[in-house]
Image 1: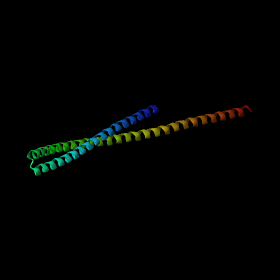
Image 2: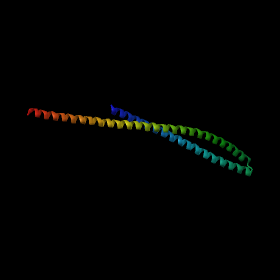
Image 3: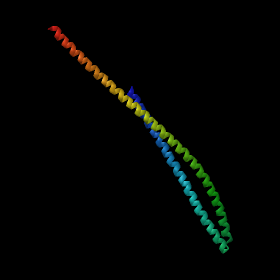
Image 4: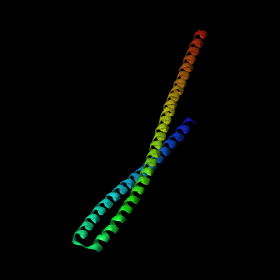
Length: 157
């Protein structure tokens, strides 16, 4: 009976560990998504800088069409960067949620391991007591048998 309970607890600990691993993988995925968004913002900043330089050059040489294209690309770059900032905020929120889920699942797994360890230790103590009781019973039975045998010998004399 106790072995079945321990096996059930062992399975629960394994299940909690699997759930923790899933949450860990999700957290890594969300962290990578945040990193990707940060990199995309950096690329967009570099692109905006390049477009701005091209616009200044076009203005300096009197290339009105080049300057207008540069202005349009700058506006587009600003819009893309704003959108990427929104994406970054959304991903950071998802990352925070994933981190909280991971921490909660880690805590639950650790608690379940603690329960398993306590029940396992208790079961070992009970098993030791049961073995000791059986040993004591055998010892007492042997002692009674020996005493009874001595009494029979004394009575026969």
